[in-house]
Length: 459
Image (cartoon, rainbow, N blue to C red; front, side, top):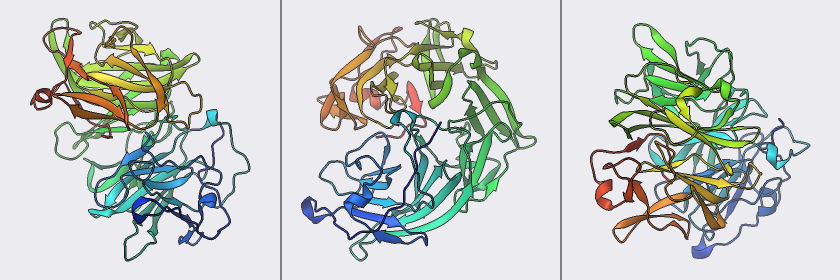
């Protein structure tokens, strides 16, 4: 598979910023080989990249705090700060790239960047950015201070870079996050997928210095980010999960006396799927034919020769065995440990979970770089049962903005930007199997939750 160049060098030209309502202006910058920023014009900023996004998409992440910017995105166009509307100004910074790419592969071959950010030293206008450039086999981090009235130019400082060559990349955006691990809580660590010899790669988030995680080699390959869990809720991750492209789901538990201990949660390698889309983990309580169970729920997105697929695995607390395809139902069956189904389109993001209901935006566009969606798969999370007569909600027009929950007249609605998507959001009714009822404010205030979603960004 060929990869799109992350960034491309360009000639510097006079700046031509676009005026925005309220006096704010667009601002475009290019990093030079010495690490400084030089202002460029809009045409140079858009060179060799798609239209710079002004509206929220699933490739961007929300920001909080003062200033004109509420979203952050990193793509082959560079680092882009934007607002909540098309009238908001944007700030774009294109990092320096030492090698020009002489070709652009088809859009269907495109993969999504793995990147992340965090506020630096608690200051809302200071950000540490980190991203993986597979073309350069490099993991890089920079410190960015946004422009102010005193200084209209961003303060951009390279922090560190480290050699990192991923074996393959996911086809959905993947977020790199800093974690405090139980075996070394003195620092925050970027936890990335490795290879057969080194399944998990660790880098100090502040310095970029790598360290070895003592886990056994495994004859498989990885594309998706490891997931971290904190079972005792002490602020340190004592458990890591890793899912291979072939479908081997591994668990690593930290034991103070014996180090990281590996075990297998599930083995879906006989499925023939490629698990290189996304995966999620929630802690939940779910109904079964006789009462209730609680534990972990894994939501896996993959693909095979016929298209895209979705799988959900429920693992009750205390159950120690390896799950396989015989435990996964092709239809609604709560006696099984999970369910799977083909999807009618390409997922553009991880699923959104609300009160036991799954909303998965899908697209008919084969371009893996497109985040627009024209339909939503709506399913009961634990059983895979459709909420209505059909599981697919077709939209009157394609949307790009992430789904967001809004209160309305004593109930809740789902919106995408200014478009109403779901006029009355439902929740699982705990009084009977497969029953649903209208989600109301009093349900959101209950102490007992149907699902605590650990890893989803709130859009």
